[in-house]
Image (cartoon, rainbow, N blue to C red; front, side, top):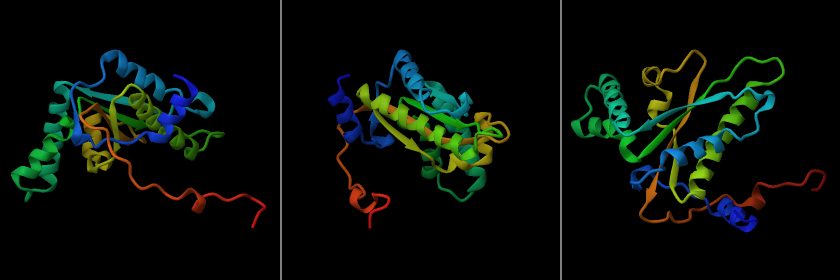
Length: 192
């Protein structure tokens, strides 16, 4: 990728809403490249404070069944349409990857640095998918914070779901959205 292509990607990358994704998703080889890109982040002490849970094919539906069951137990008055929406959550895209934060207690590497590394993993994966021409979205919805849903993922003590990354093809490129004005967020130290 040429320098200007890389800069253009960084300046135009945009999340595609998961419900607007379609087949095909990344191939197994492309998925592995996305994972490799995720692992190429700043990681003080080489701790690798993250791991991945991949949902492809029928696994998306099977996990969705469990999410719907958890949701229905917690919201017994929910109508059938809402329960079906929960059942279909992971079917919105051909490939879904849960990024799990595995922060460890370390005398020299604070939790904050490890959490930032996990965030960088997610961003690198989104950028890699965008560079390949796929749509991508990072979501944290109720199931990312729910203890029962996290047990379905096999989270260990101290682990948390950083987010679910959705990947798929796009029928239309997403439009631009308003961004924060940089001049309101940049200061130069020592200058008034």
